[in-house]
Amino acid sequence: MNLILKPGREKSLLRRHPWIFSGAVQRVEHDPAAGATVDIFSSGGDFLARAAFSPQSQIRARAWTFANEPVDAEFFRGKIRAALAKRLTLNVQRSTNAIRLVYAESDGLPGLIVDRYGDVLVLQSLTTGSEFWKQTIADILLEETGLSAIYERSDADVRELEGLPSVTGILRGTITNLQLPTLAPGASAGVTIYENDLKFSVNFSEGHKTGFYLDQRANRLRVRELAQGRDVLDCFCYTGGFTVNALAGGATSVLSVDSSAEALKLVGENVARNGLSAQSHAWREGDVFQLLRKFRDEGRSFDMIVLDPPKFAPTAAQAEKAARGYKDINLLAFKLLRAGGLLVTFSCSGGVDASLFQRIVAGAALDAGVDAQIVEHLAQASDHPVALNFPEGMYLKGLVCVKG
Ligand code: SAH
Image (cartoon, rainbow, N blue to C red; front, side, top):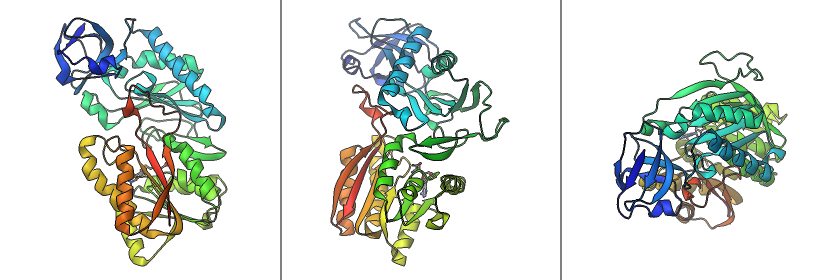
């Protein structure tokens, strides 16, 4: 089955960018099924790539390979082996048993995310292509990792764009090594993972993404190193990754804020699980935008503020609205910081790149009337690599700023 591009639309594929947008397509031959493999040709008839067909998505096809090679089980085995080998080289497993093993386009496997939490793999299939090969991929994952259980979390919103329904549940194995011994349909499932000698409860059946923000691993450690003797405010704390690290790093106090009551329940558990002082820890359920204002009006202040909000702008189209949100919270945070205080601020919006984010934070400091310097640039952890031909894979950026 073939997909032929309009004249001149082969440039991005020649640079090995894997996406073929619907507007670049001249015609599709033989009516391929969703997820089926199609050969991509230029208008002049040159073979360009072999790709997964997505009839409903604006991204009409995603390249599996730019070579004239079969796309079959052995192809996927090769890609998965390469992804696993890369993680071994990175030595991530030295400090944690919670690792992103496959990161979609960055590992040459568009639409496929595989995270390992202890002995359980959590798989997220986001596109028709990964869906088409899902069972084959599941078998290969078990063979190549030696593990026996896969839980599926294919419930991300982006599946709608592909015309795919939400799917969650056990994909392979029995998942016996959980805290909850049996996993009834719809019941939550969890596992305790460790990360740099700290332990965390991860609920991979209901938590955000696949259960834990693995991408913040290195940044959590950095916060731990910087927290000594500080009064810390952890905004958008989720299950307390930064909170636990700040307490472990000797923070005088940590206040954790999130709008999710379920997430906050796990924060307390995670603090206790690590033998950290409950007296130094407080939490508030609420909206960060409102609470920061309230704290400002009450004249409260902190020595370190972590801002790790959810994605405000998935694409560049929403960047302007997102910029207002980022500016608002960063401005308030600068005001709440004491002199010498640290702002650890993140954006995970694909639509806001690192230089725009830095400009937003600079604008926030200016409007807050504070002097501040960037002392560190932060990014996603190394098991979330960015393929040079796919810059979209770079989404998490952070700044550590010191208030003068
Ligand atoms: N820092 C966390 C990840 C944060 S994810 C970690 O390292 O694990 C973003 C969190 O923001 C989610 O837990 C979500 O419940 C919360 N959230 C989203 N909007 C919010 C708002 N307006 N106010 C407070 N929390 C919010």
